[in-house]
Every structure is written in C-alpha cells, then in structure tokens.
Image 1 (tube, rainbow, N blue to C red):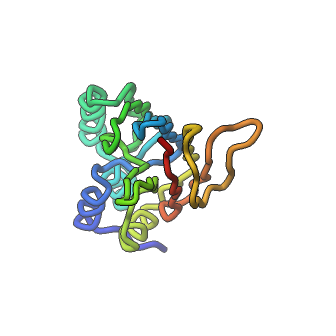
Image 2 (cartoon, rainbow, N blue to C red):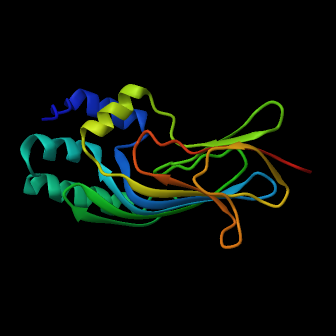
Length: 194
C-alpha cells in the first residue's frame, strides 16, 4: 500500500512545478519560428495536486472543496494564454492553452517546455526540470500521465541532439515524445542559421 503524501510535500511540489496543476492526458506542442520565437499549445486534462492528495487521504473532496476548485477554474480561465478552462470534478480540469512567446520568453500557464539559448547560440528545449524527490512525490499521488509532446522546428534549424520517440517524416513535421510518467523528459538541442 502506498503511503499518503504529506501536505507540506505537496505544497513544495506545487512551488517546484510553478503552480498546482500536473498534466494528465494531453497533447502539448511548441512551434519554433526562424527568429527563435515560438507558439506554445496545451490541450487536455490536468490534476490539482492538493486535491489529488486530499482524495488519496480522504477518498473524496468535500462539496466546499469542489465548489472552491470550480471558482478557481473560472478565475484562472481569464489568465494570459488560457483559452478554455473547465472544472470536471475530483480535482481535474479540461484546459486549452495557446501562447505566443517572444524569443527568450517562457510559457506562463502549465509550462511543459523550457527553451534556453546558450552562449554559443544553440537552443535547448527540455521538459520540466524536476528533482528526483519531486518526481517520486508525483508518482506517490498515482496520477496517470498519458501525453504527447511535439516540437516543430523551422527550415533554418539544424538539430544537434534529441531524444524524441519519433522524428519528422512524410506524415509529420514534428519531433514527438510519448509521455507516460513525470520522469519522462523531452530534450532537443539545435541551432538556427541566419
């Protein structure tokens, strides 16, 4: 039997993930433009970590908690980049996020990609950087992750390294990663000519 995760640990995990929502069933994409700007999109469900911990401990959420989470969803639906956010119950949300990002800017809502530029000009896109203990705590909550992450690069990109599940071909222009665990971490390094 899995031990219940502590509230302090969940609160720290929320801070580590820059928010209390963990991706669940989703498709996330980052389309990079020739100048290094990008378009980020997330479509799918996410789980509120504190609610998941409460359900694990108590078996369900109280009516007051459910009402509070629904009210939070209505407020968060107005945040920059959030196109749709609906509360589904039991700490779960349906989300659509669409953000246009300038070069060097990171997504503000449910960030699944971080894009950085090194001094030599190369770019690296990676999944969330999490400590081993944060990953272990997420796994303790038994959140089932079933996702797909996609990165599409412009014609002036030269890929230096990547760990994608599949690469561009006849039917897709994207590098694609299947995400089945919080430990799965997409990574691709490339340069942009010009």
